[in-house]
Amino acid sequence: FLCDKLKERQEYKLSERTLSLWTHLQNCTNAESFVNVFYSPTSKQLIPKYSLKVVKFWKGWHLRNCPEHIMKSKPMYNDNGRDQIEDLYLSLKQQNEELLHQIEIMKSQNNTKMIKSQRNRPMIVQEDSQFD
Image 1 (cartoon, rainbow, N blue to C red):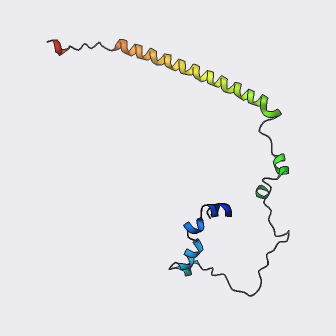
Image 2: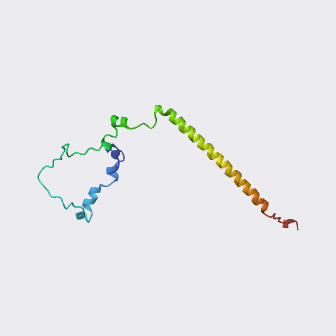
Image 3: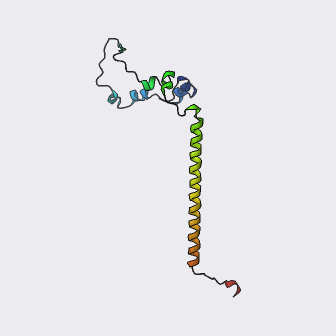
């Protein structure tokens, strides 16, 4: 289950560095618990059903890289996106200016509160014992 391609498995030397899950399952002490109870041996050849009535086709998976499928998807931007990107930029710029203005208002309110609190606070004078 490691890596997507045989080439990657060979590059990482997985056959030398890892154990097979199937080997582990066959050799573990409770291997009997991994047996398919519904399996019955047969001498008949297994023939898969490939009739169009039986085959399931997953458009989302099988056509994900198909040019026709990609062409049907809506583009993110029209007209090469220039107008839409410019509108988005101007909108973000305006929001940024509004937020900066709100920050300035909050700073000035905070400064006003600090000045008022300092006025109401009694002045504390500490004597320096060094010159006594």
